[in-house]
Length: 333
Ligand code: SF4
Ligand code: MG
Image (cartoon, rainbow, N blue to C red; front, top):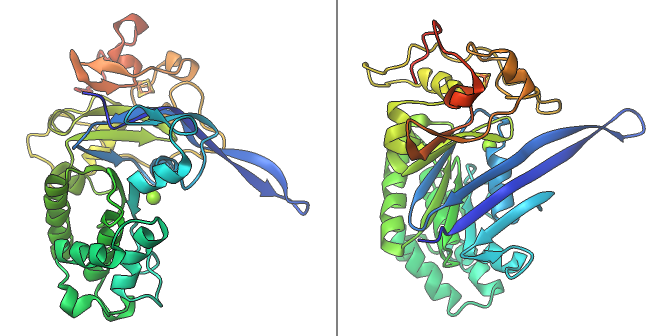
């Protein structure tokens, strides 16, 4: 089946201005050649430390910022060719972490949810809003006339979800959408999201720093490091065995991991290098215990891992032609 979204070689660099003249002094390589697909009906989890480019990728995907290079293809239609930015912004909706900042404090819940459908000329925006309120578990009779400050964080996040869904999107990008909620509320909202995906035939891109939450909700997982994709695979395969040393370190820090977790990799130390001047070759080489000379010289390509066409990693370890040897390192991917 054709994927719902194909992103090819996305690039987004941000200028950094400085000095008393405010000239451009550097460039942040926020997203640097990122390719992936999102399949119809799946939840694609996206993980990585802050600054890895997850949120920038999300903003490119919803058309909030423009790509410098690369293609975004939705259902066979390419953004800027057969797909307009306006159409993209309708079929891809986003839910952010901060439920309060995402809502206009002067609009009631119903008006807030009806706003998007109204300005996009969809039928019966207020009926849509009330239907969506019911779907996300907010009784319209009780909540329609409330203002954001009269609701809890969990209720406000339900409003944000209803607001996204009222546009009848195909894809919803959730950027740390449950991260600000208490654990019990988080579980309720995750279950709600799963039910909505099934009932409405939605597709999700779910960005989170919480590996347990990503495991719970995702079908496949994409791992990013310093603006690049380093690993992608089905959730069960990737949680059972991380192919990339970065992923292995990231997961080693995860609480409540299986006791028989197979890697003996220590958690990551320190912060990622500055994305202003990313390291040459494999960008992880400055923090990788398995780095060899070739790692700083040559950028590894995404290659199938353990014979699985679905599980890929960008590390020389997985390219037999590289001559990279793990002998004596203790890394068991
Ligand atoms: Fe480590 Fe080299 Fe693999 Fe990069 S390519 S993750 S530096 S072993
Ligand atoms: Mg972020």
